[in-house]
Image 1 (cartoon, rainbow, N blue to C red):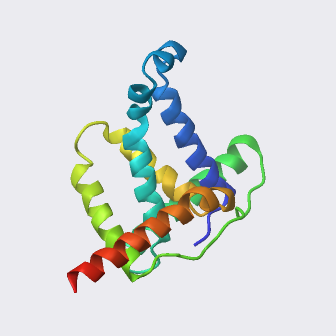
Image 2: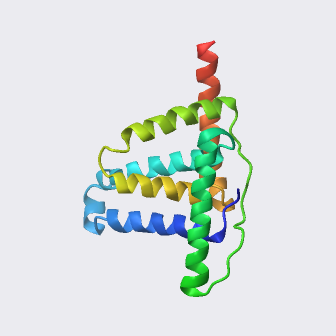
Length: 166
């Protein structure tokens, strides 16, 4: 499944929403930048989980990623067409899943941790991150700078871990 402009819109809306809720003000950023930016860490980690989820093509996780992306496509396209009268279409990007067997192995572990930790802390922020990652990960400009390195790290970690287990 490929993302449409509607899915990209929803992904960007969720990203903007999270930044607006998080923004502590310029004085707080100047006083303690590391602590202030640390407030975005749960969202960013969940964004990465969403990006990995949409890169999986088979099984239950692949189905969940496709279903979530389909929902974002439909909802976002509806918002564009009926909300503001815009046209929609397929977003430029990639439909391929660059995950190897080891990368899929690591993705299952990452998703299990995400599901185990979803009830702890800022749950809405984590779900916004997951859906934003799904909506944005396969678009061309974002995949180049975020999803491809994320898939590469998952593939390398999976190759190392599965190699260590043999």
